[in-house]
Image (cartoon, rainbow over all chains, first blue to last red; front, side, top):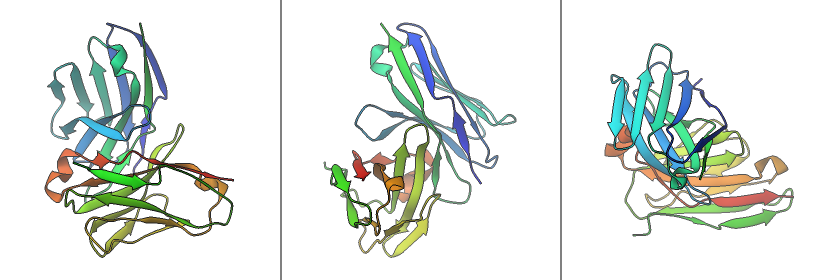
Length: 111
Length: 115
């Protein structure tokens, strides 16, 4: 079945870049996503990438996809304290309408 | 705009009790989902629905039931609560033509504790 793995914690200093990594198992996933969850709230979509792309940039966010290794990463440039949150990688399981989420990475930004 | 509304926000149940978590969306979305979130485990899909009258099991459906009699409502029922069902539950919805974008709308969550 589908599985999405992430490291649980990441700590960076304000102004540095953050890189959050994710591995997935379903090689036929058409879309891959990054969501952000702030304390006490539901998830919000940050960005997504189509599986035929290697990279997508959206302001401070850069998504890299290595389809061969089934590896997805999210880079946040100039990380701010407001970026402190849990970040989830997710895939759209091929041929279904299911979204499978990773374990989430808690990003802590130190002032 | 209300979006996705979940009730209750908090609930404590005794082992063996039953309850229903309510989820309503006012965006006329076809697809609705129930997830549970446990620390270090991420979100696990319990059940989902692609339209009124149609429901399907997700990754962790045991101990839960759902129904979808209208487009707006997707209640989640726990029949015999167990401590393993202590979790935060999220309802989400998306319109059919946005499925690829992953632009899910999430409720604020319902925190359930079973003692």
